[in-house]
Image 1 (cartoon, rainbow, N blue to C red):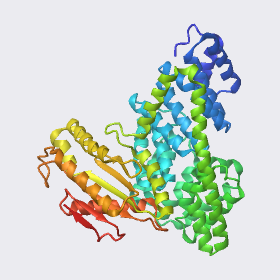
Image 2 (cartoon, rainbow, N blue to C red):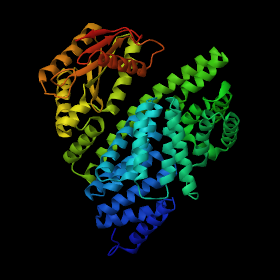
Image 3 (cartoon, helix red, strand yellow):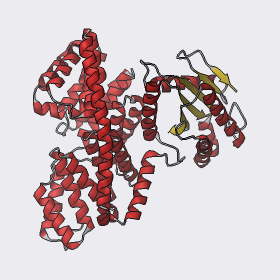
Image 4 (cartoon, rainbow, N blue to C red):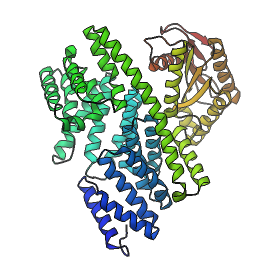
Length: 542
């Protein structure tokens, strides 16, 4: 930024900001307030946006997350009007992190996707890496590890393309650790160890770099274990648990407690996981609802392994009480954000323009840009709610996964522009068959789509899936490279049943995925539908 003509206070602010950021620090409250006063006197939206952003950083560093969100929300209008898109991308990313600390996961995800809109468009690779990594970690805590890996790999690639800065390796290594843990959960030891080798290479190449030592040591545990170095893995676990007695060290690893619990669960006899649970119980983490709730599977398993049913019942009851409080506060947090935006409309933009802008950003965050269908973020939220309702009401729930037969060959032959048109045409079929509260369609990724059926019988679900198959055939989109039809066709896997006590959302998606591949193996251009958990029982529809 050109500093000429600005008062010395502002020049000092910008120079100090650059210097402090290079050393991993932030400005103090007093300096930020002085710049905001000057911005108000001169009407400079650029300085107002800068001052509010760095004031938000100050609040963030001091754990004042409500004030962080308020400052960031107020800065958005100034940054947009000043076309300061890099800082705007950072603003949305920090807003997501602060919302997550305030236990509102959906607001956080929406903010991360808003950050991606600007980071991807203007090639801010470092910010894109942060947003992708934050989305991935949110998916990890939703136990969607395969989806998280895709975002982690994108984040790592973005970090590798970024210019060096103080936080680069800290974030890159944390991202690699979290991705590696996902691979371990998936049973892919080769990829997990490859990431460990990459981390070691970074540390050899840049020995003085800033990174989280405890996070790296944490990841060493499973890497040593899968290589058969059990004694070394156990020693590392004991050292980390000893360090966690220190309140500052515990605070540093707070966001990674769920990952650490998963790592310690790899070790034999559950002793070290028990010790971690004991340490967590001594600390008060209930205010961090997301973390407390995400730790439930580990602690409940630990209690059950001891056979203490009375403690298990008491803990589970407390979990559900906290879950309900968490849901209520999520709703209130969303209301607070909306009210704050409403109060600030006169200092950012006129109300009509702001509403249109917010609606557009919300649509971008929750809908796929190419097809207009719901994206995976919206799908995950909708799916979880439907699953919980179906289980509570003992109603049938259906999940369909469908994709386009030989779509890669279609793209290669006709080109990506025609491929996009084909995807839009298929999405158009799905948009027509959507029924609010019963049939929900989303783009799952690439040429794959998911349909969630609720409040319907198996026969009704079968008829809708057949309608989709028939409507796609009626499009008569030529496909010279298909080996099952002269026109574009689809394969569908549909699983429908009442959720049982031991079921989880991923049981339905994985079964639908099995049925989709059975449909492919049976010649494609058809449907495999089943109400049975067994992989060999289904109805084939051509």
